[in-house]
Length: 106
Image 1 (cartoon, rainbow, N blue to C red):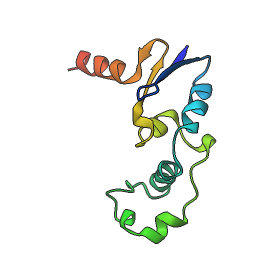
Image 2: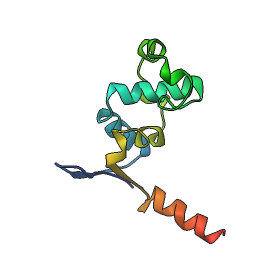
Image 3: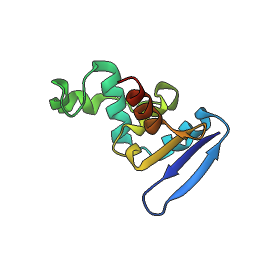
Image 4: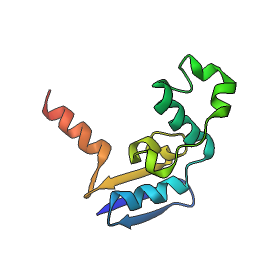
């Protein structure tokens, strides 16, 4: 079971059978600018905010937004639009699970 929770008002919680269904729903909430940021990072390996080419407005403006099949759920969650969502996979929150594992290996 996969859960996507929109934390800002009006908030909601939706359950999905697969990660791809959750990703499809999240994709609907991510703006074109954030999708262009994903494309920028995929093509240049740099952050659009901090990388060398990020300061080249013509380059960023020429990009097409990333399509659903081209980005992972973490790409979407890592955007300015996606950060307002809480994502659970199999009942465990991805970030909580990571921090728990990291603490165990110290």
